[in-house]
Amino acid sequence: MSEKNDNIKFLSAISYIFVLFIVGHFAVEKDNPDLRFHKYQGGVLFGVFSVLYILDWIIILLLSFSSAFQTMLGFVLTSAITLAYILLMVFGIRAALRFEQKQLPFIGFFAVRLREMYDNKTR
Image 1 (cartoon, rainbow, N blue to C red):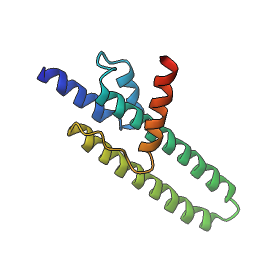
Image 2 (tube, rainbow, N blue to C red):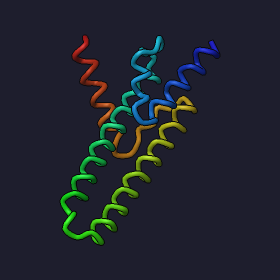
Image 3 (cartoon, rainbow, N blue to C red):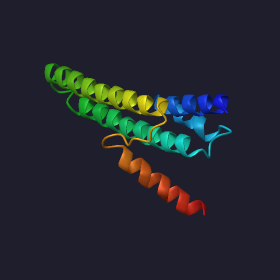
């Protein structure tokens, strides 16, 4: 039983690291409530920050007329997005390693709604 808990803990923790939430969808324990919570939250985290990075890239391209302003704003935006992503990733990994289902700020609400929508469609 301990080996299974360690596997769920590991899969839950890596769900927050970039696209590794996909690993939880193919795991044997994919129906475990803790793993399901963390893999959905990791997926929403990845999706939201992917969109933010794309918007950051578009803003930097649109500001290409002023290289000094573009460089400063690009650095500040990219740094802020990266810092927020890393902080939320650490919070999620920490909760997963403690077997806690804590919603991440700004992200957790959407992950819960997404999981509920998916559960209602599969029933």
